[in-house]
Picture: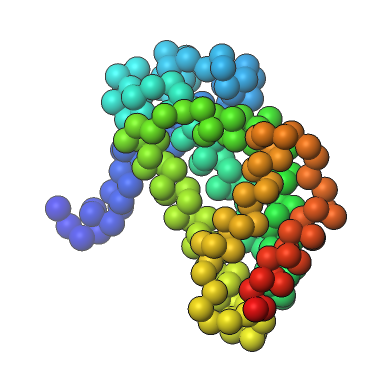
Length: 194
């Protein structure tokens, strides 16, 4: 096989099948809700065999969570406002808005209720790795601007910021407004300045 053929096959059939299945799952969830999604329906919509779905995801629940994680990654872009405070507030507001959508609510509830299988564990790890990379970019820019110390832990910043938002979305179901996100960011930045 030539180098050009190898490059063209990057991702290959497996990536196309994964994309088709996740898109079909999201479409079915949008139409019927996450609880009504069935593997036979998803396989039919995606144009794949049911066994392909079960082999990769194992259970309907893991498939739903992987689709929700994939969608949430698209919906939470990297902000670049020129300041760490602005970036963190923009990110927190995007997350709050996402958690208030049907998909966001379904993700929060599904992640809390599901047990970890291999496919779900891999999806969750991939999702959080990308989120921590996002946080690292915001932190690296802030360090370069001299806003925070060089030894600031990006994962800690992200976890500290998003934990109260998930707590409200999942447990107390209290609203998340811009005042709250601003206060959380200010509290976090006060700690980083120490």
